[in-house]
Image (cartoon, rainbow, N blue to C red):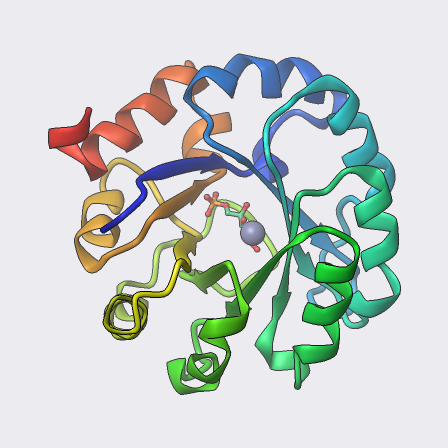
Length: 221
Ligand code: DX5
Ligand code: ZN
């Protein structure tokens, strides 16, 4: 049973007016997606703990930090101190268990993410240890890329594994989500839709978030 949430990704917001941008979408945001990029794991360089701390002072929304960094271990303490509610780490970095332990110890939720080219089998052994599985539907690095529909097969496999084992793990999808692509993601069993450019680059971001939700889950709208 899907939990049906929309997570605006602030990567596509106007960083010079970040507080206002967040407040504008807050009524339709179940949580906020914060893209942390270090210029190494991905070429782009974005934001870190100081910006999370500034957001924390401005909003009560759940702050979900997607760590696209080579060495998340050295940053987890700073994100926890900044007020992050959860961090999401990439399986491509290798054994995530030490990171999970540190996140739990610091009171944060645990997320695990896999890239479009990474097999779903790599994350299935960790389902009992995580709160969130993030399936990337673009190659990470930038907002505004085209949705890769083939990743939905991985969502279906993960959905079945989670439901069969009755685990309280949410499935999130990130990249190229819009009114057009959201229905297929919802149908595959996604719980949380991340959307950056489709929300913050719209003329009316609040309405855009509402439309994505309604397109994905028409009966719940
Ligand atoms: C991409 C990021 C995404 C990004 C999505 O590396 O992980 O969260 O903000 O942006 P859109 O929704 O524009 O594809
Ligand atoms: Zn992201």
